[in-house]
Image (cartoon, rainbow, N blue to C red; front, side):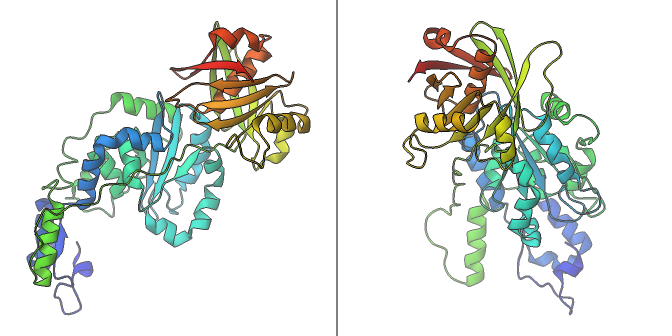
Length: 431
């Protein structure tokens, strides 16, 4: 709201109408650029109104991103200037954080998504952005559509790592826990609510373990008292106020009936696609139970117990590591003619990779077909409403067999696969 942005060369306002969402903005406008104050109209925030209207669908948005029971969605948010989380001001914070995020957060207990400002995409180009973030994407990071999907991701989030941009402020207004990875104050109006928010919000410490910081943030979170208040002084009214404003500007009568905003669309189903090599830590804490923790990076088994193996998607870029993988998996339709059948594909994989102990073909959200090195063909199924990656079940079965326990012990009682604190009952049947 500086004069250089609002006034023309002759000192008159550039805009016929300047739409504001809250009276505090008008007071700041009147203080810094009184010439533009007569053009100001309080008309709310249609973006915020659409977010509020979509809050009942949070669980649908979470399922669209593959966020199931016991899993937390961490959204990374960056605005577009050099001091942002994804800026080039010298720290390169987000690029340096990404390898740690994907290796410190267990893949089946956390989901990572990035919301980058449209100007970041425009300034560098989509190809460059995807190239920079390629390793993180193959480790489970999703790049959210910067125009159509970011609001839904915010509604689905359990925590946001962000900066001084508006997306981060929207998250705080929703009551979502926020850690600031970048927090410059120099470009913010000292009297603006976002300045007070950035000054007070907790900071991410890049030196300390990241998971501990996020978990502590969520556990101890106290929503800021007035963040939502300053987003809009007239929540739910923007459609009516803006339509009235536009028709008045056109000089024609406003249509009959209420003004409405388009609801936020349900995004397509986009679970994490893990094609980077996975280090899988397993334990057998109880009868017919296997605890599985997968990381998209090297890890060591817990002190004194547990074991580790490597699981790899067949389409991995690190194809040279397939020869060393203990478990090889892929996703596809059971009747995909390119692979013959799950039975044919699993036999082909074990024949091609003599070191592989188990091949798994995931045919649906809760089902996979596996073949052991002994040649036994099995179906692992967690039933309707399954919300775990079935490739986890394959790693659990591999750990069971590697511990010297035959799979036929599971035909009657089934197998419980545990990811974090969440238990997934899995039936095991011979095909």
